[in-house]
Length: 157
Length: 157
Image (cartoon, rainbow over all chains, first blue to last red; front, side, top):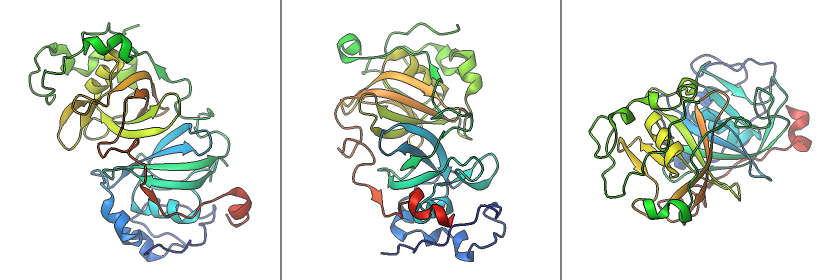
């Protein structure tokens, strides 16, 4: 009901800067989390830095591609522009996936979990999701674990 | 190489308590993140509360079931006991999925992402993953979004 119309995409050439600095082409209201639909803003359970976790999943294969972080403004951009925007915890600035690499994430759907601290963003990923060049940020990064299954460990737990 | 042998599973009847309190049956060393393989402990990029995000995915369908949080000890238990253990940010205590609900998560694999702040835990989920009774914590919780695709918005971005 309070859904915002899609703004014009921010051109790639415009630096995407930290939320407390002026941004060319961005309305002042974009700094205010209230431009999110009120029910969404109210449902978010943000961490101490104002962020929620955003799981990014390939929409047709269900691969988990990566995890990023979003504040209200990153979520608003993701919900309204067709492209995924994150907030970088290390660089403390917004980044729109693919602006540098070309590896765009086209938004298919976004869901908020039951307790409001995680988003599931289903996308169509262009190329590699990981900056290292692997398809997902988890590829080839498995840890050594003891696997569990009901028939083996069920009688011991 | 520094992989630890699997400890005996913590019996369900033993209260799982906060990391700074004594736990029956748990060795003192379990309070120390160094019992994780050293390379894993070194690779973790923990938030201010000492936690990383843990995405839980059904191993055979690739459904994203939920997102939880793990500190070093929760990850150690998850890697070595065959069952997923989280650290609750709200209750500030460990919780092993399924101990109350019966909706156990049997561990199939665990991977750490490229920058060390997210885990992908692939499991075999018994019953509903969500405490509300839905299969996943995202079911029926979609937000209204503007979808993107290359052919439609590619010429405008």
